[in-house]
Length: 377
Image (cartoon, rainbow, N blue to C red; front, side):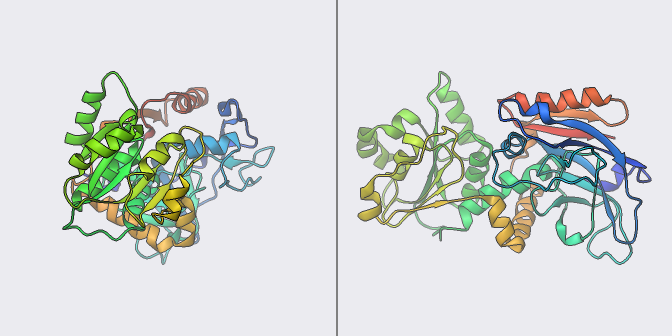
């Protein structure tokens, strides 16, 4: 993995007179691309109190789409400060930027540094952004920009799911079980777990190329064992086959659920007494249904996880998590998302507004890979 060598090679020389941002003033649950427009507005001149950032890349995450649809619990405040006719907000929660202007007296940052916003609702779908306080930013060093652009959501989610709720014995035969094993978060979890000698049982959907996908997850990403949803839901498999997979004195201490429905109850059944299940998604759109016996007789703890809320409650832990995950990427211990991402290039100087808008709409609608918009300067 090639590291991010130096942000200084991206410098444009000066801050332009105007910025461009993808903005919205309303919501549409049926087709959220209809509410987006590319808006050009006058930039406030760099002053003693303005940090100016140039955007390098931003992902198009499900939470971004949900905000445009109007169904996400966390929403940016709409404002008239951008010069729009109606109060509007800039889309995007996550992205990576380059510092192009610093006011005097700011410590810990230099022009050319690569940074990400500490909190969500920053408005990342833009050519430039400004902020007033360096504490709103986290400096990223020696990490490629696609990894940096996705650390705040996927990277932090995976790290905190694994480390913030369970005390692991790195010398024991200890396991976690997770569904949606092909998801970006699950792939990072398996890599982090392998680094800590924690074993992973990953559940994936039944498919024609199951063996190929399972082999890729095990050899490339470090999943200890991959099973299908059919096997996950099969009580005979659980009683007769699973014990031989787990091995002697196995302890399944954590379940990570991002699917819901029957899948969630099946991974919960595999947990030991007093174990924890964390639900951080609901891809099936089915409720999490857990057997009463798991609560009464096994002391199951079932908790919700939302990285945005965690970040607001404990900003310093978020900063530490980002820095830790970034170092793992920089050291080559985590695979960069660039290997599996669909990169969409925004040519800042040569694309028309309509072309940019169509590019973003494509990123919203196309599934199968993580769409990351990279700005070509």
